[in-house]
Length: 105
Image (cartoon, rainbow, N blue to C red):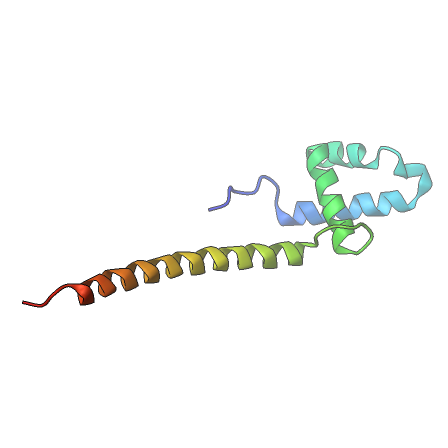
């Protein structure tokens, strides 16, 4: 179970939008993340990470998009589950094969 989020999704979206808008204006671009983080009570590194992810999702920066990361995590979970089921089936098959090899009374 993931840890509870410290910041709400609305705050995250608003802060990211404000930074992206501030970066469009060359005058306010310098120090935009720190200034907006202080105004909203968000840690600057958290905001920097959100902005990077938003830029990646928009295709402005190389990297794994949020959708791809979610799909990858789901596939990894499914892979773990299938490996576990496969191991259980192998154990069951070897158990029943051993039963067939025993002489009957």
